[in-house]
Image (spheres, rainbow, N blue to C red):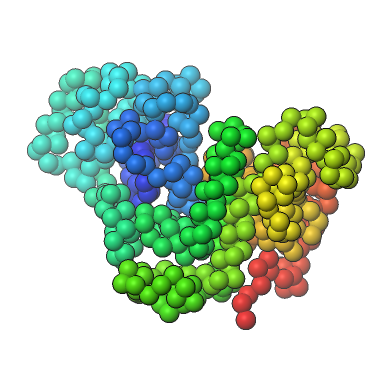
Length: 461
């Protein structure tokens, strides 16, 4: 198989990145292009890079479904700096029959000789150099020189839509100007919903993000770094789902003159933000919807808090707090952390909201009436689709993500189907609470198709 590897920080991903990936597939007959964000970019160790969870969320939202352009988290598996030579070596070990094409920008061609182990990189992949026009005298001279140095592995990749800067996009957002036209729509929406790059968040209040940071710091010492990443991924994936459902159901307000804006003050900067939002299609959720997004964000973050406990400690926690221990709980230890997390979230982290606690307690198997509880549904779907996950073959993970944004009930059914396929692979049967929940979801979808079902989020009157 011919596989393109496209690395970078993607801070943020933009249409130029997608154009390069598509051009590589077309011009060199690649079977797929793997978008591979760097965890610690070698050339940006001293610079601030947006938190991993946000860079990955923006990629998940931007990548097209079904085009053979997919997210690859290989560089998030390792500690330390993300060196291309190490990554390509690992890929060759895992896929010895694949032919790799490594994609770089024209600006990287000049500095390639300063990269870590450039000779090794050149021996492991054909290097495609994305350029707007390969007719330039300087480019052709440099390309010829690099091919002389490294054995003819460099090839020009012509991309008409390319001259875009992530730095320019970040500055554009920071200065409250019109959102850059090079941003994919869903990525742009996510940036504004959660206040990245210095803009005002439109889906939550700043207090909610501060509470998230506070709970993250308290949670971090109790679980592994991998589990913390997963928890952050669930938090923002669930919050994005529910924000999308709320916006689709009309739970929005005009940014200019809104109650939330009035509460934040009436200074010049705030007025500029309102004007930018109202003129350029940046919608803002109303106060009730923001509350629901906040509760979902925090429930998602805390869903795995009981992973800090060992198996015996988990059962003791359940017994101590008089949680009913069913045969299913005893026979499947992998689901015990759900109800135990409900206890710990309340006792250790001060979560009192019953819907948040319900979502934490039911995030593994769901519940028969899950679709009457939007927070639970969002967290349940996000647990299987958060951006640090990449391998759920049936149904494909990008498909679940895409469908879940459009319809929470369909998204929950697809996530349940993925879990059932996985359990069958391990030799387990679909039974118990999971089977009952899955059947209830299928029935709800059938009713929706006949016009009898109700939406997960009711439309605002």
